[in-house]
Image (cartoon, rainbow, N blue to C red; front, side, top):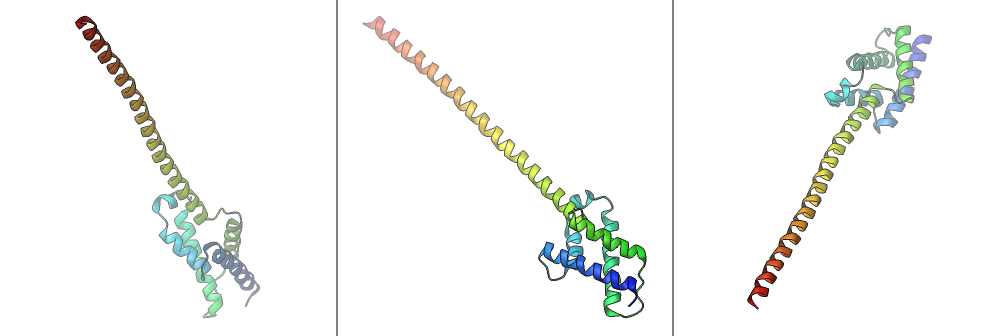
Length: 157
C-alpha cells in the first residue's frame, strides 16, 4: 500500500469507530449513510449541501473498500484524504450532516409540541375564565331571585 492509502485507511477506521459509537451500530460509516437515507426531508433541507455530503460519504466508503479488498489499485487522491479528515473533524465537533439534521428535527418537534402545549394551556385558562363568569352570573341571578321572593313575601305579610 502507498503512504496515501495507509493514511486514508487509518483515518477512515477512526471515523468508522466514531460512527459506530455514535450510532450504537456494528457498521459505522455504512450505518451513518443508511440513517442519512432514512432522515426526514425537512431535516435534511436544513443542512447545506446534504445530498453532496451523502454522495461524498458513499465515495469515501467505496475508496475504503477498494483499499481493504485490494481488488485493484485504489483510486485515491489527496482531496479524498482531506475529505475524510474534514468529516472526522465534523464528527468530533458535532457539526456533521446527520447531527445537524437530527438537531434540527428535534428542535422542530419541540417547537410543535410547545405550540400544542401553549394551545392547550390557553384553552384551559379560557375555560377557567368562563367558569368564573358563570359563577358570578349565577350568584347575581340567585341574589335577584332571593330579593324578588323576599319582596313578594314582604308584601304578602
